Image (spheres, rainbow, N blue to C red):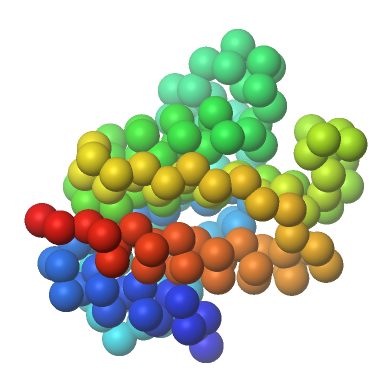
Amino acid sequence: MAINSILESSKLIAEKRLKIAFAESATAGWLASEFSFVPESGEIFLGGIVCYDVCVKEELFDIPKETIDRYTAESAEVTQLLAERLPKFFKSDISVAVTGLTSPGGSETPEKPVGTMFIHIKMQDKNYVSHREVFTGSPKEIINQAVAKVGVLLLELLKTYHL
């Protein structure tokens, strides 16, 4: 069952006749899945790419190894690049990228604990949302909260967006 914020944002995306696509790391396709269940899915949803492993970010999205080494694969900088490069694969009006840490290990630090998620939304080269938040719970709960947050951020962005 889709999260309420996803349902509401999908209605606004359809009303504005926009298309959406995803680059997902930590959420591993969960966003794409949620958007495939909304009644407007055929009108708004183009697809998504799961870029869970760093090699996909480097090889498919051409994110320089130096950038990943400097900021880590789970960072605001890499997430922004994923959103900016997603239109290479989809003719989307809205590009959403998510990276983060749902379990111990990886690039976890005291400043970036487990639960830290990065969300970047790009709309037609005009509007950007860059969001960092630390969620709590199991990996599944962290992902669920991040997916819901994407819906909320989309709603906020779409309410101020005019064609």
